[in-house]
Amino acid sequence: FCSTIMYADDTVLLASHKNKEELEIKSYIALNMAAEYCYMNDLVFNESKTKQLNFGIMRGEVSVFPNIECVEAAKHLGVVIDSSLSWVEHLDDLCRKLCSALFALRRVKCVSTMEAVKVTYCSLFESHLRYGIVVWGAAGQENLRR
Image (cartoon, rainbow, N blue to C red; front, side):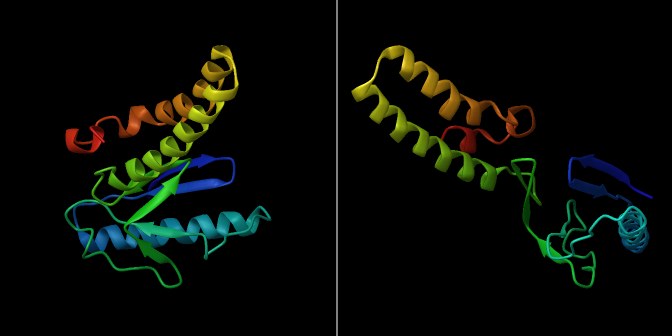
């Protein structure tokens, strides 16, 4: 019915179809199967943490599941994915982290050795910059120039 991506305690269900009604049916069945799987394996299916994120030209037309919040963006494994795949929200989040790291780098630079500054750069700045770049690196040039 759909593709399932599982990592630790995160699960993503991906359903697609050209027909809106078929997509809704596939999605509903997949969500119920996931809930049943959790129940059968003594896992918690937390509806309050479950989000519905719609992509594509029909994203505004697809019905919202009962008790499931429909969102324009969601964070998955540290990468913010938005419904238009523009990566704006992820890059906003990344810029906030990099500004904070830059502040720490400036503080360390004043009181420590260049080696300590390099270690701080790699752990606080470069690690954030590189994480998920394979996914969000194709964002529009206007977003990447920030």
